[in-house]
Image (spheres, one colour):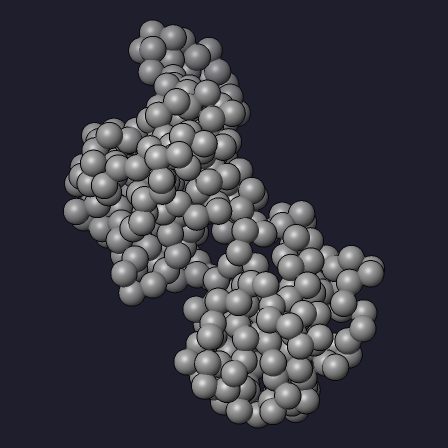
Length: 330
């Protein structure tokens, strides 16, 4: 049996355990972005595809691989895979849901704390010899906040948001609201220490709003003008999910109008981000109110190891005639 890997070369071997199912397979390693014909020339006879979470897997590639049984995303996303084509051909599509949950949750907390403590400006202040002036300013104004002082709203409540809620509780946050299309039971809310609110009410009540949604036709651009207008004045906004969820123009307006105090963004629309991205060309007074990180929330070594353990478990199941554990389609 054979696996075609479409992604960063060497990742399968780097992050897979030595006793994993990988070492029972013939492997073909390829970068993303090759033509379908190039992939087929390399591995038309592969039984499995393991693909970067943003890789494009079209119907034409499936058509040229008669033995293909499983297409497995290396991450949570799988919107680059033609699901209808996979369904028509009886090919399982799987993802690594939950593998990077703790890592992304840590990144969300990092951005929240980074904004509350204004780490960008404070780092610069010390480097410029303004330490005492900045410190005394905080003491006089009394506006340096702890995370436990804040009400936090989580928009979406999958595995990452649940981990985020647990980390918030560890920081002493007592008011954690969530929004999802199907609320949890009261017993489950009590167990997790969260409370459901309709979206508009959550936005109105929260000092920090954090996005934890997948990208689909219902969520694309959900953080737009009405979303930001509904938020509390001077609130903080966090996105560790996907850049396509946010209307960049609406976000800029919310910052410029002081609706938002700061935004912490681990991901942007139009990745890979180029120097002419609109959020990188803001005037200085607005640029300082965005804390960026380069979409690294989910790429810790531990999350990759968890992902590949899931991948080989699913592929071994399919190889042995069983249904993989993490099927998303068909």
